[in-house]
Length: 547
Ligand SMILES: [Zn+2]
Image (cartoon, rainbow, N blue to C red; front, top):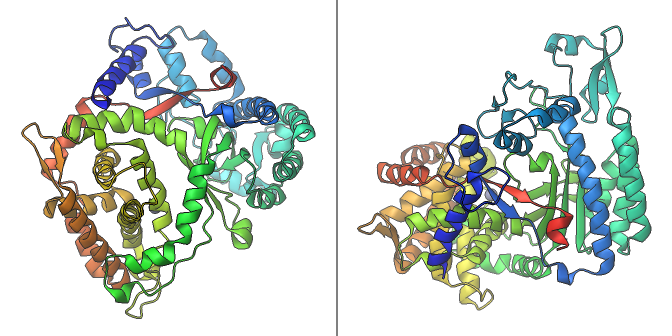
């Protein structure tokens, strides 16, 4: 079925992107630069199984959506300015308008923030958090301890002097709406944990002190609904990295996946013993208290919806909370499915041989992603050579090896759980083929980051050990038995590298084996020429959810 489905889907996508904003299937292929830019983002309906939700939960969601819309407005104000946003109505090119909506402004977030709207120069580094004409010297000279707070903006008073304004004052009008909507949500909320959190969050919006509500959120483990909302990440402030940008995720927990992850995480000590590596590297006992859960997102607003879409959440950011309670990690299943369907499958369809394309499955992809997270707990944290923690011994090489460890040990966990009969919806071959297709997706834009180097070391090891070959059409044919052997060999290699803590050896190995080789570069060119989308744009909201 998939072989037929994929080309149809790809065609539909091209048809959709032919005419911005319209679903006209007769539209021509994209021609203008703006059409091409919009076409980089594949449309995807953001939904979940609404039938499992109670009427009360659905009523709460409707309120959360309204609050999220305010977060969206606030982010527009922070990133671009509400006045500039209003001017978008004057644009005559619907594609340009649509692209500005995706970017929340005039600058292309996937293209080094280059301006694409006429009349705009370089993006102000401080976005709209600071006056555009403010210099760093002027900021440094200002005597106000609140100027570096993540919940204040800088403005000019009537004399043109810099002043610091707290968010709850600067955004009072919008936040009054949030306050009243949260009041409505609190009044009807039936889940005790969620209610407690909403009460605390409402107070946080009033005072710009989020600590108490973050602490309560850490304890909110039973509620099926979740609502991540507020000023959270600091990336939009590229000037100093101080100011937090508003965003919201409305989330519905996937109980089945979450319970499985919790159950399998409990098996980590046993899995550690089975790791295919020298016994001297697996003497540590992995922790089993990881807080990793699976959710569907039903609404993205503000910062997290701008440009590239977040597929996992690790919050809160407040280090005082980390010390007391750690963090919660949320894997966003439908968001990953969006990327799988619109990006990964078209790549696999180009690169995986016809006999194995049906082994590329979302459940295998999602298992590999989730167990990568779990597998960070496996292996070794302290060197066996007396050099202290692996992180310190391997210095700037550590991240690449740690990611490589999590990738390969994650695949090992999936394989083991399938063979134990614990995971039943995929086969070992599905896991392997999807894993290799996943590497092609990850490195399509190069392999310079730590995880890219990790991907390349694994890919090259697999290739050198015959895990895959290319058929006459240049498509990958995965050898299951040789992949199993390569998996074991590479696991042993990476864990030994971590356990030995030999910085020079690790660096030399990564420099030699962590690069894209010529034959892969040719494959990546083929992928590039196929114009496969690079990210997602969501169709979302009440219309999509409550059809
Ligand atoms: Zn990782």
